[in-house]
Length: 281
Image 1 (cartoon, rainbow, N blue to C red):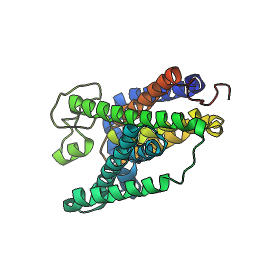
Image 2: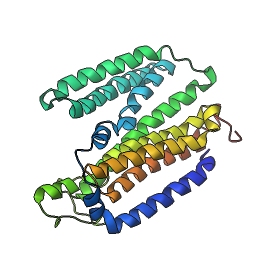
Image 3: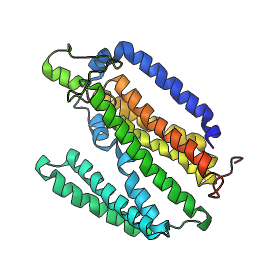
């Protein structure tokens, strides 16, 4: 199936390369021009832009719980659902509620989301010949999420790039460094953008043709919808002064690349064993 995405993959990396080259010259000035941290649209996406990443464990966990026959795998699904939902709730609360209540309220709120999803999951019907495929894709989604998070966190620490809004607080742009300059571990975490990488987890839509002939015929949407959503989130991060163009470009590229690697692995190891969508569709 990876061959079906070849054109889209090429388009993505051409756009990313062009964006990164442009960022090498306009990073700082572009943020100066766009900076507007009171913009309501951007504030909303600051809270909700990472939802594709935060929701993975909930949906994948419920799917695994109901479709797996192995008891250990069912327990894994339950833990993924409730654990991921608790983290989701904390993430939402950290943006929408008072700081002092973040941990307690967020975890309780998140667990309630997980339990609700678990209850509703029993009403979803799956074709028997696709159950193994859904389990494989759910596990793949969780793995992709953790690889993406790990890559972003390690890169942030190593690069140590100062955020634009921190430069504004300092009243000087002297601490600005280009994206290709590695500063080392210093507490700064601008490069790459975690929000954009989290939004890029929406590229997991590209896995849908594995289990749906309907989506196989609309493969372009599996690429276009995530591209538009991730681009919007990336733009709002510049408006908020949280990141530079190079930050969001690399963040989005990391999320996309990890997803493409997962598709390649699934193509090679599981394509012919799960009754998945035919390559001729």
